[in-house]
Length: 102
Image (cartoon, rainbow, N blue to C red; front, side):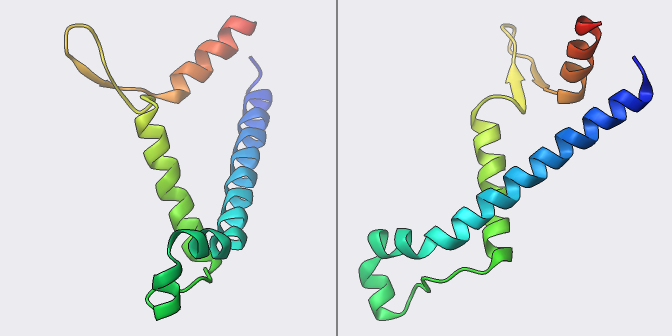
């Protein structure tokens, strides 16, 4: 496969992943006040929780949620039938998919 095509696909994939992260962080930032008011009304009334959130806080929470969801989906660390733990590398999966499409 052509190296330019691979780099282009990696660039497009990275761009889409970054766009998804930004959109998710914006959703967290703008909907946090409604979520916090429904989950913690007494804590907000007493001033223990601030119903506003900065973009950096939303980015941090978004990254933590991504890691937790990714780990729980079994795509970071897996175990085979013999009990051997192995890490899953997505770059190998992507290379196999690209080779199979040729």
